[in-house]
Length: 330
Ligand SMILES: C[S@@+](CC[C@H](N)C(=O)[O-])C[C@H]1O[C@@H](n2cnc3c(N)ncnc32)[C@H](O)[C@@H]1O
Image (cartoon, rainbow, N blue to C red; front, side):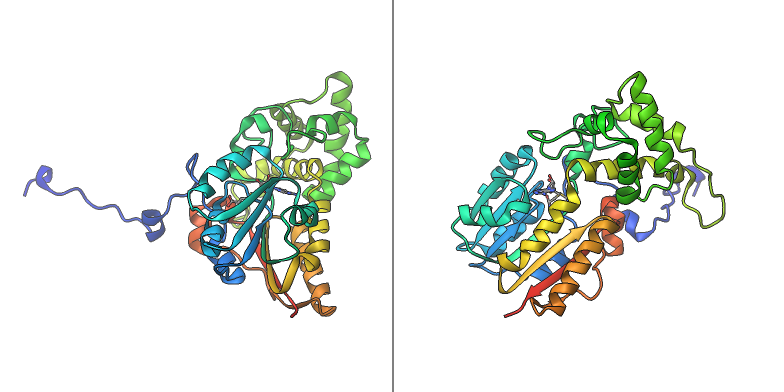
C-alpha cells in the first residue's frame, strides 16, 4: 500500500466531543436540569402546575405534556416577548394552559384570575434566558454592544443606563459588592460617577471599557488559576450580573415568591427552584430550611442538585445552576 492509498487516520476524540457540542446554537434551546426537575416534581395527568419563568417554554412544554389531557399549566414571564412564541409551542400539544405576562411575585393574583386556589407543583428557573442574553438590543451582555437596558420587562421600570446616571456612588458600589461580589466595587462606582459628569454611560461597550480601565486585573499565573481571558472578563461578568439583579429587583421578587409559596402549594405539593448565583441560593436554602423547621414543609433538598457532567459540557450556561426543592406538609 502506498501512503496515498492508506485510509485517513481516525483522530482520537474524547467521548463527549462525539456526542455533545460545547455551546447552544442560536435558536436552539435546552431546558436546564429537565430530568432532575421531573424527578422532583413528578408531574401527573390531571395536575395543576405553575411554571413561574416561562422563557422559551422549554420546561413548560414537557410539563404540559405530562399533566395533559385534563391537567392545567399556568405560566408567567416578565418578558412580554416570550408569551406569543411560547403560546405557539404549547398550542401544538392540545393541552390546557394559561399564560400571563406578569411578575411571579404576584402569583396569588394570577392564580385567583385563573380561579385556582393552590397547585400540585411549581417550577421557577431563575435569571435570564439565552434569548435575552443573545439579543444585543436588550443590553444584558458585555460581549455584545447595545443600549444598556437590562429590563426583563421592557414595558416598565428603570433601565441600567438610567440607574448609572442617577444613583449615588455608595448605592452603585453596594450593588456591585452585594449582587456581584465585585472586590473593586468602590473604584468602579467612583469611575462611573466621574464619567457621567462628562457624558452618561449608555451602551454596554462604554461600561465594559470603563470597567477595564477602573478595575485592572492582576493575572494569576499559578497552575490551577482560571484561563487568562476568563480572569480578564471576570469584573465585567460580576458588574453586569449585579446591575441586572438591581434593574429587575430579582432578589426582592424571589423573596416574595418564597413568602407566598406555602400558600400556593397544595398539601403534598412540590416546588422546584433553579438558581444561578449564590445570593439567590442562600435565600432559597434559608426559606426551605425555616419552612422545614416550622413544619410547613415535610421535606426539602438536603443539598442542591447540580447538572451532570454531560449537561455542563453540552450547555455551558448550565454550569452554575443549582436546583432545590421543597414538599409541603400534608
Ligand atoms: C432561565 S429563563 C427560563 C427558561 C425556561 N425555563 C425554558 O426552559 O425555556 C428565565 C425567565 O424568567 C423570566 N423571569 C425572571 N424573573 C421573573 C419574574 N420575577 N417573574 C416572571 N418571570 C421572570 C425571564 O424573563 C426569563 O424569560
